[in-house]
Image (cartoon, rainbow, N blue to C red; front, side, top):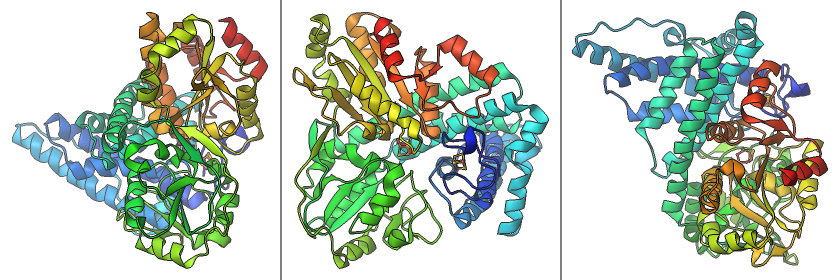
Length: 549
Ligand code: FSO
Ligand code: SF4
């Protein structure tokens, strides 16, 4: 195996024997092969679309299959075998659609090679062997590290984009333009592009299309559940039967809340599900009782201690401990071998039965809380007060400290950073990186908590809208606002958000805790020269530099 798609990659270079995440070489090969197979599907789907033909099943499958290869989503070889067989079947369907449409228009259809001509091996070991043949090292040998790294940058951008598009699609928000772009970009990758400018351009295009995806997702979430409102959430359990829900999928949570209504079972959010408490369409369920634990990387300890079943709706899943493996359930594209998979059924009866048979929390814990719900609507409805506070000097600077959390000790930077931000500055945050500081008491400026929690990483559109609205109010560009972006990345959703910010021309972003292994020094230099992108240094230096600019 050779995988360097996430921030925790072995030695900062690549996982080659076993993923730090727990991904084994067999699964890694199947994931590489699935991306290859999807490039073949893209070759035909892209050409069919030129004749105005597309297929909803092909479109949605493309999203889900790409999402399944994202870090910490699916570790189950059998599920990948099934995805691969479906990819071949739908590739053949796309081929037939293309050929029929071309012939109907009087054209001679192209005969395509490369991934489009892949024929799946008959069994799992055969598929693994095929995956070994298309791994990154083969391209590195043929095309060099810079080009391969840029191809991977585009691929990882597509993974993040597909994940967000899948969330939006689940809530009924789709766009033919987004599907068209995905198939176009997969076709582009199938051609083994080696032109650095074309690859950088494609990466920025991916960021551009992702802005549209994030807008769709925002419309999906707020359309289904209303705009988040500031909400105080207990982070301490109370006595009673309990179910824990992790991941990002609000639809799964909604269905679980409906099915547990009146059962006496309390539902707790974990990790990226915390912002769900702020949605009017979810918070009215009184048994959505509180938040439990911290960010994803602490789950092995926290799930073991949780006295009830646990539902993992999306990433980030880690290798389950035996002590809770039979209490763990996966949904959607998530998978771990031998963990009960509920698929897309949203039938939680088995989870509810297990919760009723399990002891639950035996006593109340003295209450502690966090405040969430500062999405764009909540923040911008206070825009005048915020603008006045800036003009009067009560708010000197905004720091957007957001992104993923992870296990590396270097991530203490983000805790230290939040603690050291001067008291006349506001911190906006989103995604699971917030757990580094969201339980600290950092006080208020006037009516505003100094830490404003915008939501999940899925709510990046909200953060962008807030920045753009502030820029308009002050009649300056976003880069001229008293605003600094201090981002933490872990997986490919963070990659595509970074591409979106670069597409928007946002400059001088600080990225940590370490830079991506797939971005080689010459490519990094391009990003530094064009966008002023820089690695984090120390909180003291980075705060000083931000306030001086
Ligand atoms: Fe975190 Fe995981 Fe939301 Fe990511 S839970 S690391 S960017 O999957 O998606 O922020
Ligand atoms: Fe390693 Fe990350 Fe790839 Fe897992 S996803 S194998 S930790 S680089």
